[in-house]
Length: 399
Ligand SMILES: NC(=O)c1ccc[n+]([C@@H]2O[C@H](COP(=O)([O-])OP(=O)(O)OC[C@H]3O[C@@H](n4cnc5c(N)ncnc54)[C@H](O)[C@@H]3O)[C@@H](O)[C@H]2O)c1
Image 1 (tube, rainbow, N blue to C red):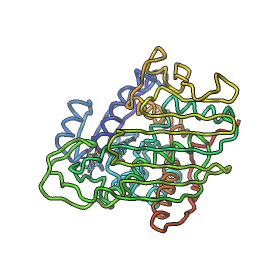
Image 2 (cartoon, helix red, strand yellow; image 1 turned 180 degrees about the vertical axis):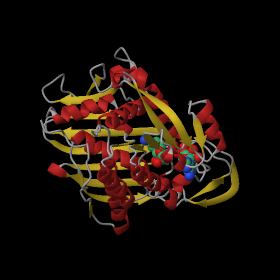
Image 3 (cartoon, protein in one colour; image 1 turned 45 degrees about the vertical axis):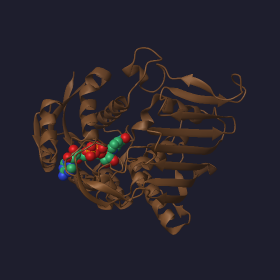
Image 4 (spheres, rainbow, N blue to C red; image 1 turned 135 degrees about the horizontal axis):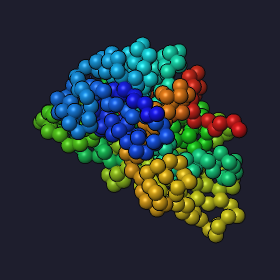
């Protein structure tokens, strides 16, 4: 029998909108969950977002104060899609209320906040989910499976780069993302958190030490006069303010099992728009996935195929959750579909009490690596990345 699940969403910006739409899609995409998410209440201080919550997204109630989401007895699980500086206080309030949450990355503004959230959820016995959406790309799932089954031999090195242009215009608004207090790190927390998680996800191994370099290329931006969603254009004042966190990062890294790797990320590239690439190299082959061609996996396995370079393995019904979204191979999935997969994993975790989705422990691990990268760049030396004590999901299950 189909069960209703009372959902609250904190913040209706870019991610809040995707989370809300993802919950609504579950009965269509994952009917076997036998769940009908009920969008009970959304909290956002911006009036137009409250109106959108009611009129576009179908929430029963829209409020300004997130406490009303957590305190609502009809809310059984919630999404935390606020700017980073609010993650900690909202998550700790959810933990206190005993409510499971799906939180966006980076989880908090530093590793200490991430740790408190992950440990708090663990102590309260709560399942969690984290917005590491690129894990759910079917081609990335296939890459992980190929590594896990040994098709690439012993993995020697990994290369991940996430080069974006969302902040490349110098007249882009000085939103919360450029404030140390409100965002924490810059591109390290924003994109590199995905990069670290992806590298750990496809290799099944933890990053253990890093040597980082960071820089800021656009040091001032105009102060916005109006609220926007994501990186959208807004009305600007003629006053500027300082960019307080980094635009660019490059990293050398070591992993468990002797793997080494490099990471690079920029938010101010002029050219690539969202060029997110993962390459895994092993003694018997290598694989490469790019968000620009998400349905393709570039692959070479020694002794298979023409063996003169990569061939393109195309994703189909057998890969990840592709078949949920398209009934035939060769079709495309969207970024938003990755959030539906995440919603399904979160809701499954809530219904079964078993952690299925990327966890707060995974987010703590990424935050610890991010913090080590920033510290290493400041100190100009290698920094160890500590292991975390909360449950993580990136390691390959023991057969
Ligand atoms: N998983 C991903 O790929 C991905 C992509 C983009 C953003 N994010 C993460 O999602 C989070 C939100 O980013 P976004 O792009 O949606 O930002 P956004 O700027 O589009 O939205 C932020 C929203 O928070 C609201 N807000 C501000 N103060 C609030 C308060 N006190 N209570 C409740 N709501 C409040 C704003 O009104 C706005 O609607 C960030 O942590 C970000 O890093 C993740």
